[in-house]
Length: 248
Ligand SMILES: Nc1nc2c(ncn2[C@@H]2O[C@H](COP(=O)(O)OP(=O)(O)OP(=O)(O)O)[C@@H](O)[C@H]2O)c(=O)[nH]1
Ligand SMILES: [Mg+2]
Picture 1 (cartoon, rainbow, N blue to C red):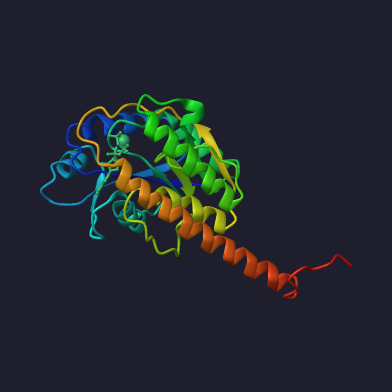
Picture 2 (picture 1 turned 180 degrees about the horizontal axis):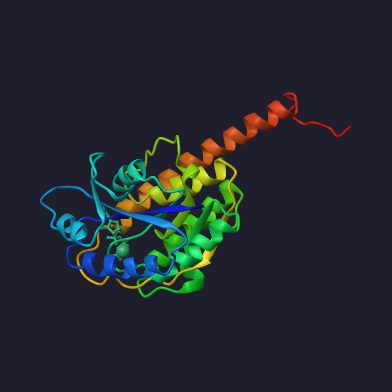
């Protein structure tokens, strides 16, 4: 792995973007063995976040796929040239100095590294979020046969191939499910690394517990049932179509 793209979705984050990019540029300077590109994805030319990001040396990309974090990330992935991609929020929730830990996990063989707030802690959880995250992560783990603790965390790093050739359907926060599902389907190892989540340092929350909760649940059921059917089909093909193959 030589090059890394950091993709940052940002909608009306003008109060936070400058400091975040300063801190991120500092962290990047600590990883001289890699070449980095920083891509900030905004939705409209009226959003001052774009000009501020450009001033800090970031490449600014317009999301033309419709409103939402998932749509913005897909626009960024489309432009990303790195061997690996790091998803990074623009509200101060994620600590730039953690990028080294994510990169190390990929270098050790993971296809997808997810920041775990269960291990790293969070200043931004409440009962609804904790409960929702626990239920959705359990359901995802059951359907996909993996053992993870925090599938919804937006701090993720993955090999570019995880999203290559995939149609990114998720428009909103269901993107977290789609990316993890793609990694499982393509057979990549998923690991979790410790990552602390800060409270957003300015601006306004873009997520909505009920609306995004339903969207996430639907994505888990849709992707999970598709994956189970795919597994069944491949297993049947391998076993010559026998419903209950008996050992020789
Ligand atoms: N370009 C773009 N970015 C978005 C959109 N929706 C969310 N984002 C970004 O996605 C990231 C996560 O959104 P947040 O509002 O922080 O969601 P959250 O973490 O659930 O909410 P907080 O508790 O307020 O941090 C932020 O960097 C947002 O700016 C969108 O429609 N377009
Ligand atoms: Mg946030």
